Length: 138
Image (cartoon, rainbow, N blue to C red; front, side):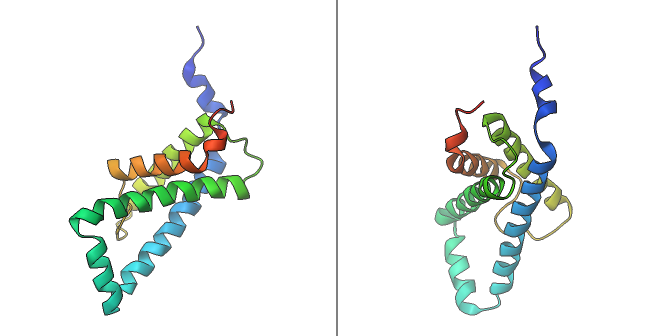
């Protein structure tokens, strides 16, 4: 009987962590710009409206879907030597969540993307939505 975890050794972990770091870094810069934008009254009012309870959950989910899609886009266009398949997409989700968890440990301000269940679902949707051409590839 073969070991199902043996395939984990052969995934391209270093490029996936680089992609996750780049995507998380870009979203961190966008979050910092939004935090600094709250100094402008009109942007502050807009963010207050968007982050109220009915829309707040959708905004967090949309930001997480965007992060997952961005990570897949970076993987497709800048790491072309990586053969993208379904296990690689699952590993990319894991790498993105590890990067978000590491960012939360560094005590940076978190506006949208905290490492929680909602973010996990959004990243999952974003990665597999952007990478749906690679679902069947093994």
